Length: 76
Image (tube, rainbow, N blue to C red; front, side, top):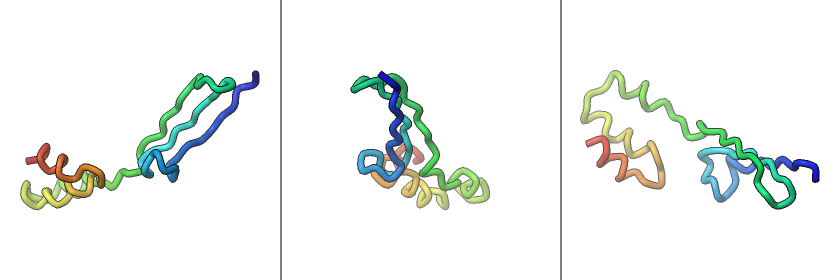
C-alpha cells in the first residue's frame, strides 16, 4: 500500500499542546514517527539568568502545567 502521513497535535487532546507527531503509516502499521518539540518553550532559562535563586522558584511552577510541584522539588 501507499504510505499515509498523519499530523497529530499540537492541539490534539492526547498531546496537551506540548508537541506534534508526524506519523507515517503503512495500512494500520506505524512505519515512522517524527516528533516536533518546542511548543511549550517559554524562555525560562533566559528569564532566570538575571534573578536570584529564590526569585526563580515561581518560574519553576510554569515549566510544566501538569506537574508544577515536581519541578519545584527538583529545583530546590
